[in-house]
Length: 459
Image (cartoon, rainbow, N blue to C red; front, side, top):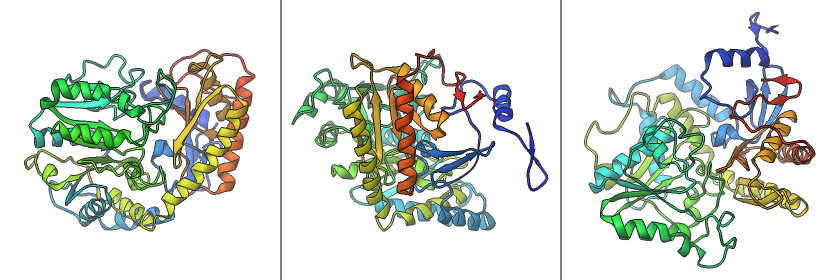
């Protein structure tokens, strides 16, 4: 039912708007939580029915500084009044150049760095591959199992998760090879021991031995996101870098989800000291506005000729103004330090649950990039239980998203600005959802837009 707003306009309810979604939006655009958000601040979101939700998703890692941070809003308002848009192919604007200046200074790149700005993470990934091909004259890109690099066609060819992303939309570019990622929880040995990354990299060694002269780049996430929040052993990334460079290829670090303080460093690869040739970042770069970047060694970035790189909206002035505000918020290092403290708080709670609950097969993470994996009695992934947990969280007005090859990983991406009380309340709701889900029957597993019970609302 519609209600009257203070300004005299009518406001549709969540049910009305979800019915509209069914009529006008294709089913391929799925949603994890069947509600319609009206406004948000920090980690608290309010839907069109006035219900308050605690956000443990951050728009899938976009809102590390929280929803609607005052500094970001102020920067956006100033820029809107000054210059809304100009395409960089027509004329430069200062915010683009200042973002490039700041990113080239803070990114873990050896020597002089240069930056191109895009709209999305997938676009940054595709441009990084183009740059690597131009710089090396080689065609192949090597990616890792369980990786997620985007949903555009080339980025999707690099993505390791088949369902639902690749269903019915092939064929994909063939100049891609995939090798195992270091995942101790899913390792057939089932153990993490010193030097185990050596064994994990046999696949990469084999590809480089067989086709190394054709490999332009190896692309890797320092912590896997969609794949299941896997943190590799500390020797893994340095060994990937060593093998890649020995083959004459370039290392692309995908920091789209792990970047901007999420893991306790501005970029996650800084934990290992690895400095890639190219780094892609997006999501939390602009505090909620669409902006991504490819940062790389100047000689590599200059390999493509004029006109090879760019796009109409890449580096929009308003998005760049937001990014400059975000970069300033991270300048003193306090937010990454807070990520460590908040992540430890969440991991401590979840590990206590794990000791008493055999359905929690693993608790893992780095900084505030943390997750738990749901398993059945035999220790195998339990998608049905994970779905029940998700539904129980919705009933308790907790926004979560799942990850992993079987969608059995409950991943937490709460803002780094969340206060401890709100974090604890969200964890309380998650704990209650775990208990409730284990007492329920098994639901039918369907697609992402399967009707979900939401406190009396059917979507």
